[in-house]
Image: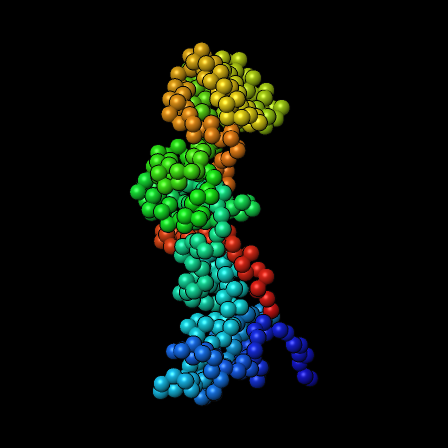
Length: 420
């Protein structure tokens, strides 16, 4: 009985299918020839159409079909130039294959789609490819640095550090940009977080883009702010409110730790045991507490007026940051909050008050357009997941490629990949 057959698109143009067969491994071998007449001369660049012969057979990997690996087999046409001295020949350039690649462009796209939110090793195993083949796809198709010609305008520039390896002080700086349309882009992965390294990168930004950057959002790291102030003098420097919050929340938490240490000595085991759960409840914002957590906090605050006061002060400052205020109004309210802290006598807030004095303008610049590094922090979380997934990526060029692919892979390759 004859086997049923169907016809599916090959997803490449200007070719004729000569034969389709299965090899001993059950892989599909599709023999084709180009129907495109001519190519550009490799010397003069003119279009040439005089056929001179064909090169040796080439076999390349193509899109899988029905769970089977498939291959394209063809002989590239060679054309002869009648205008150049010596009449040199040139192999035909094809729109669907790079002569230096073992894959069709469509298969490369398929692999890159598979690689989004995955690992090179996993995709290699699924596709039955050597690891080096997968790495080669990245090298051929994904740039190792930003293409400034593709960027019209950056609205907000984000600078933040991330450790390449947990427990080691091997920091790199991630430079991200938020475009006017809201799109987030990876702009650079810098080998360190010092001022000179940041300045070197900022000087690479074309003047037409640099002049339109409205704000630079970063944490409270002097190297970042100084570099931005020198190289982007028209941009507003905004201290990220989430980094600011980390400092004053840490101050409140120090009060909680001190009070727990005291209560463990003063209370009976039974009474101290009743405070279980207050650690988690204390760290939550008041608006996020459930009924049981509010009850636990009240019990803790009955034993510690200082912890209650620290919690209230923390929540009051958070409320100020969430209010729709002008910069001037915010500065007035924050000064009022500082007075309350000073009257409270809670010394654990002293370091934060000093920080507030040093970074006053940068912190309150947040209230001008309510800009923050939230997009950077969300982006950094993706990078941390990528590092864990790949068990660390220490080559900065590869890290840039993988970040770029995870951010843009679906947009770039989803619509061009056809699955068999």
